[in-house]
Amino acid sequence: MNRVEREKRAKITCATCDALCCQLTVVLDEKDDVPAHLTTHLPGGLHVMAKDQEGWCVALDGLHMQCRIYASRPTACRSFVMGGPYCRAERDEHARQGARTIALQLI
Image 1 (spheres, rainbow, N blue to C red):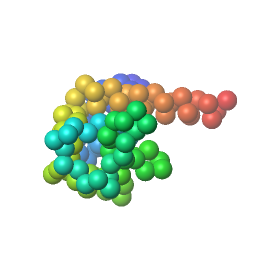
Image 2: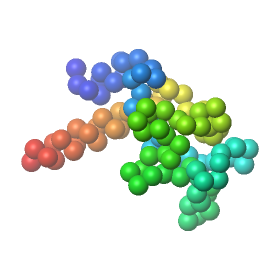
Image 3: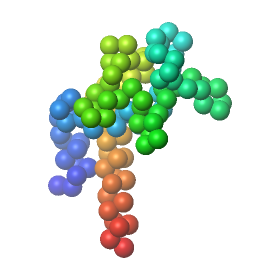
Image 4: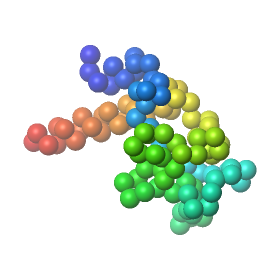
């Protein structure tokens, strides 16, 4: 069984989460109460969570892989279900990209 198949069967929990969703663009809703220093506006005008230089959400505590503003996280984050279809799709894509990177390194 390859990694992608194992990922599909694996139970995803906080202990096994890679926080890949914290690399997605999080569009903020006007009802979201996120501190301004954690947000930015994209060239097209969308108000989003800011990202660090490595592409991770600035609200992520990278040491513990936990959201620093979990209790007041944006609506988009609240609707992202850990282990749900979108979560698994992101994990599958990440696994495929990792396999491609390894294959390219071997060439």
